[in-house]
Image (cartoon, rainbow, N blue to C red; front, side, top):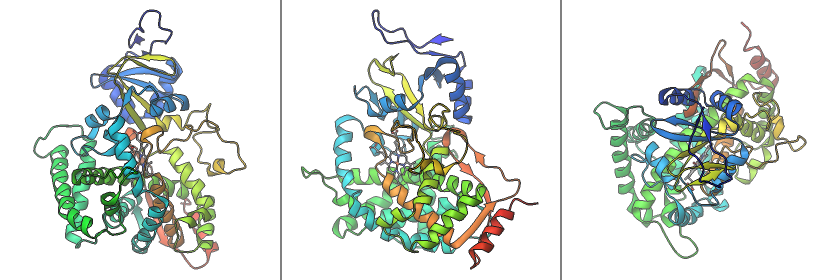
Length: 457
Ligand code: HEM
């Protein structure tokens, strides 16, 4: 056991202790199985401990109280800029999450105007036909569900966020450039060496930036119902607006922030529905009763699917770690944190704490029904983060995920391939599985029988 830093003399805050893992062991343990690593650390040191990763002291702060302190940042001593700059600043520079303090507040005030209820209702209208078309073309047989959702969310991004229908070749090129940037952010080799993901990511950034820069004058002159136009038009109550560079930087970050997250949420929900035929059936019954075309207000008619989605986000939060950098000597739940340390909370681990959630490893959407008792702490369930940087797109994300699953349930039925495994890539939250998919027969009872026989040899 070792100590991170001694608190100043007379200071009542407790020191943070951690295990004697070397940097590589700590990095591997954390990235491969954050939930297990968190349990190990919590068992030995309690909710606050530290490890060294890539030469950095990283405080691991677990539990809803720590998550709230970290994200609310009352003392203004936790910053996002330095950590996210390190993680993906080369590709997503000056995205909202990289901004801090007053600059963040003023940009967020402007961006909020692109996510009003009226705007969300318009985005829902735009999104329906895109999702309907994609689900209509959903393949049958063994299907890599993650790949399908990834393609679908990119289509949504181009049409609903950017408001363009490009020739297939150009759409593929822009999509590929986006994927290159996203992949580069998680690359191990983090230098522009030819042939590396990093290099491809930088090329992708240049391509996507050129694409937005060329389109920007058109959007400013003839705004459409898309998010890009909304960012061009957004202004706060004092009349402040985004510059051209701001709009481009925010758009590029939003493509990133919305894409993998929605893909993970959809894949996990589809996986859990494949594993739980009774929830798939209940959700389908509800989807068939609701109108085919949803409105934003109409999402309230899908309470079962809403519970399923919430539970999927609890089981596998797409952003499994929330990091900050201590910009001054500070503290977290009574422990002394020296300036310069990184502090993380592990959302996925927090969502599986046995003293916070009953039977946390079981998929149980019913726990979100109003009749059941739920953890009281508002950060017990925190897939969208909390505090000043909480996800600005959370209502959009909920709408996109519910709408996609709604159409999927109405059109096809699926079960997990026998002997399948859910591929899990630890801290990156990536998950993939292959489902057997088939078009729904007209009679729902036939479908239910098929789903329940899927696991039989
Ligand atoms: C299921 C889908 C999504 C999940 C789970 C998710 C999760 C999160 C989380 C946890 C954060 C906070 C990170 C931190 O505090 O360090 C965040 C921030 C953010 N998200 Fe999302 N997100 C999702 C979808 C979206 C969508 C669809 C958009 C945009 C349309 C979006 C835009 C953003 C932006 C701009 C931020 C930065 C906010 C700020 O710094 O003030 N996200 N998201």
